[in-house]
Image (cartoon, rainbow over all chains, first blue to last red; front, side, top):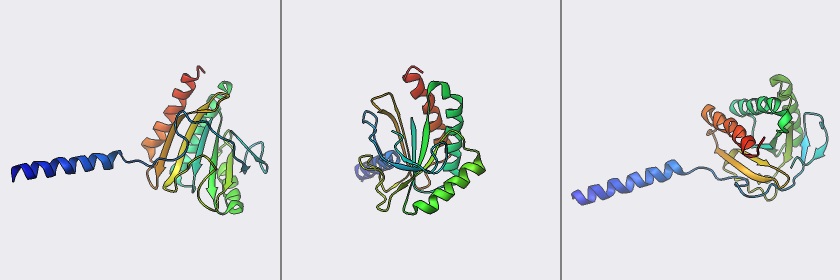
Length: 54
Length: 130
């Protein structure tokens, strides 16, 4: 019984750790290169223009 | 370059943009730049919202832009997750090598996260020798 409880505790701790570490992964990662894409400028010196800021 | 990708305008996003805008203002001589990309299905409505936001919050150094995004997938090749409400990517140099990536799910962008992101701008500038 003790072994089972300890095992369950270890398992739960592991799951909690994994949950805590889980973060959204999104977008280019370090080491990758930023590619071109077009946006509409709403503000700034290029307001109203469609351009790429890359 | 600091690119902030967002799906909606929130108070914390506005705070982040203002902090980054201030950092850009301080580091103009180092060629630091930033822009916000609002990924939206309503490009026209978002354009007006961003104009109003810049005026109200006095965002002067960071262009606020709209990416017409009916599929919610973000710019091609950027691998923007549908679970990410905000993602901040920083790159440097002519090769546009990404140095930093921060992604935040719904409600995850908080004051501490904003501090972390802003602190990383200094690290990236230092790493680039600027």
